[in-house]
Structure formats: C-alpha cells, structure tokens
Length: 167
Length: 167
Picture 1 (cartoon, rainbow over the protein chains, first blue to last red):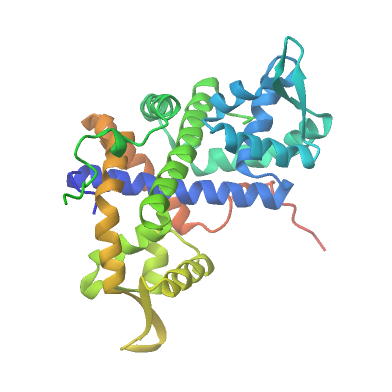
Picture 2: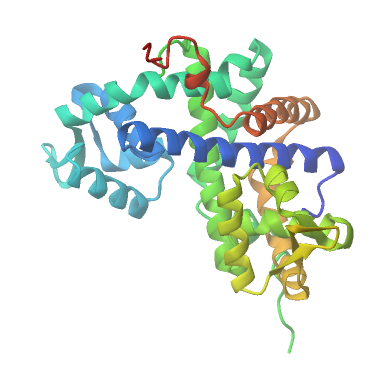
C-alpha cells in the first residue's frame, strides 16, 4: 500500500517502522514501570543533566528534542508538576524562559539510567557492528535534520500529490 | 547516561531514537488529520488487505504486528467500533477468532494510502541508497525477531540483574 516503493524498500520500511514502534513502546513501558518516567521525560532529563549549569532555554530544548513548541510546553509543565524540572525566566532575556533540572530530577534520572541503558544495549546497540553503527548514525542524523527544518509534510510540498476537485 | 555505550554508539542511539520518535508522531498526526486513522490502524488495515480472503487469525496478526495479545484486542475492538474490521470465529476452530477487513476498512485504507506513502518516501525512504536500505532491513529484521521471541526485558535476562530469593 506504500505506492511507489519497490519491494526492497517496502520491506525495509516495514521492518523499521514496526520494530521501532514496538521498541519505543517497550522502553517506555519499562521506564514507567521502574521509575514513573516516560521515554520523553527521560530524554529531557538527560539533555538538562548534560547542559552547562543543568539548564536549557526552551527553544534550544525544543530543537534538541525535535519537539514542537506546544508539545514541549506540555511536556515541561507535566515534569514541573512532578518536581523534576523548574522553569525560570532567562537572566539576559526576560521574555525567554529556561528549563532547569532539579535535584529530584537528577536523582530520578540516576536511578532510572542503569536499567534503561541495559535495555537499550540488549535490544539494539550491542547487536550492531561498526559499519551498522555508522550507517544508522548517518541515516538518522539526516532524518532528524529534515524533521527539524521542515514543519510541513512532504506530501504538502509535492506538487500534484493532493487531489484537487474540479468543478 | 546510557552507561556502557561508547561515544559513537551513544550518538547513534540518540540520532535513531529521537528522530524515530518524532517521525512516528508526525506520521500518526498526518494520518489522523487526513483520514482519522492512527499509524497502528493503518498497519492493521495493510496486513488484512494483503492476507488471503482479507482475514487473519488474531494470533497471527499479533505476531505480524509485534503486538501483545491484550494490546491487539484493544486495537481491534477500537477498529471494530469504527466499522473498519469485523471479528468472526474461525470456521475450523471455534475457540479461535479472526479479524476480517470490511469494505469500509478497505476504502478508508485506499483513501489514506497515497498521502501516507508520499510522507514515508519524503521523510525517509527516497533519501536512502541501496547499501543503507540493505543495512536498515538487516538491523531492524533482527530487532523485530528479538522483540517477537522475547517478552522479557534484556535486563531480566542478564545474570545478576534480577535478585533471586534463596530460601
């Protein structure tokens, strides 16, 4: 049903999309069960923990997470209610705001990390040889770049892909 | 925070997990907006449309989708309410049941397919060379195999990671 893909690319797409969907669901389930964190919570905590002074501007965080501004606002508000992050206005720009990792956020991340890392390695990363690591990094860095720079759908950009009713 | 991964593998994991999560969300949003289908609905419709007599046993469908039985039951019940599939008991085994594609399900899939296919090609597949297609197919076929055969988490399989009570 994916018109225009040859058999090889269709098999590739299906293997990728089906297994990735399940892997993300499984990692999310495991994290929630062990620590109450979603996979998205986890990524926010990792990025903040690695940033200078454990804080990032909201715009920078949205870019790093490939999140829309509204999705990031929802995500950070939820984490704020659980005490994992705080929001502060930027010292040098009163209109901007920053997400700041709290001590509780850091401790929650440190508790969750070993099991999550074991899952990531066990399901996927330990199985890859060096050439596969290089290939996946290349492919998904390009994908992230396209998703970051392009809010519109590819279909919306392709002339003629949307049927126009003629009266 | 993913202990035990070297810098190259950590960068690979992050590129993969972050961009895949966004791609799946974006495809799901686009499908819902255009046709009211989720990405999971879409995959069920594709599998049923390609099966002999447009029907599959629930167990076979769960295996193909890499879904747990309970998640599949929930998924199929939701699609049944929307008239996209029907459930029938198997002719040769009264205890088993089959999911059957309805005409409405087939028509919905045919309407949704062109735009979804354009998105899949535009975001990812048209960008890949032959070696990358081969690499991704190999890696994600292996991942699907591990996820299919293994309900337990990798952490649970690692000696020493599960505390065994000795009486």
